Image (cartoon, rainbow, N blue to C red; front, side, top):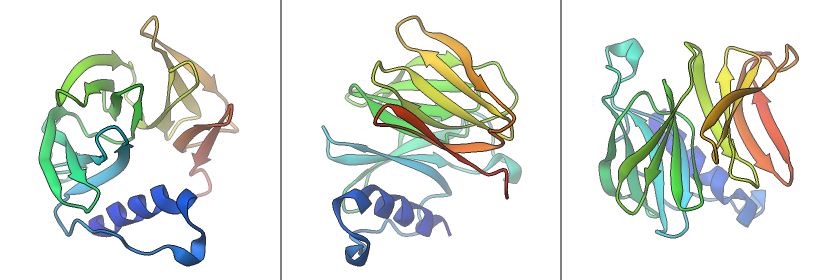
Length: 190
């Protein structure tokens, strides 16, 4: 299942480049990830970053022992634990030469050229922070599964705020800013 998760993510990233009849597997990592959650493409370095639980919390994993892996476009590891010290990483995105990773306590900002965490944006919640996107101004939006809430991080001021909270938005998961609007995938229907 974990191998197929990463393969699915790679195929989804390539869909805009080809039509549905032409989708084919181009690479595969094999069963090396414990719990991959999200993949981000770095066009500058022509590689992929994968949020990777080393062991899920439900199976005895500990906070802060998880990592971000770095792989090439053929599915080979460049570094299995490229950035260490993140807590249950989920959604990730690249923007303005920085990698943003959702973790249990907020969002960490990473410098891909150094492979290090350079900033933390803490979100005070016990809910499940899930996915992330950014708008034209570089502000970040974080979905909170199990709630009707989306947080916004104003990058210029590092301010974290509830951007929307509405009962019509039950159990948000995936989030994407596209062409001036934010698209949100919800799981409220199971």
